[in-house]
Image (cartoon, rainbow, N blue to C red):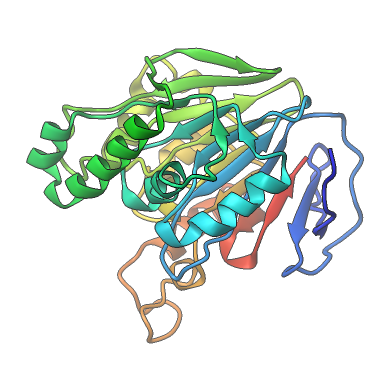
Length: 302
């Protein structure tokens, strides 16, 4: 498959990890030798709005996409998928907020939509969303309509379900929490592990404190530990510090724009109401020094 070389190396000083960074970033060290494994990209936001978008390529060149971002992220995502072969084996939707589903809904509505084998998710019913978070209903219905009209199979996962995509293991360790009504949709994020024999990545979606505490007290708490963690809710007002203490990550993946990374509402660092700086302090206490932040451009982990 013809692939453009549009990334250059970023080495993070952890013996088992090999990472690269997009053209916006500077080289931070020497490349690290590593065994063959799946490739994971963290895509940067294309608008000022926070979003979440990841692409995984298996050893056999099949693609797994996670969420995808906002409407304004769709053109970048479309081009990225095309560069990687133009077809998606599995598309995972962590939860039905527009900054996680609108790009996918947009692509599904286009004649040139990439071929998508299946969409997997753990989704509340529209009536539940209308009752507990009414403003999210319209974009959710738009997403469901796009999926139906495109004819892509939508698979509702179960807690503990495992999927194997050409040697990439996906394990669902949290599903929708219909009994949690505070921060309702975020707390119904699906949490899942992606791993092979080389590395593991834990995706938390936008889980909040309540959903994170349920996960920590649940039957899959022992499956939390991972090499990489996607920071919950873009790195602020997500799961508790105790959850990250159970994960003990070597590297944090932040789907976080610059203003949110600095908690800046226009008045400078720390001027906003968000908790990003607090969460950054948590990770410092854990001794985590490796952070890949979407504000800095495209990252790839081999």
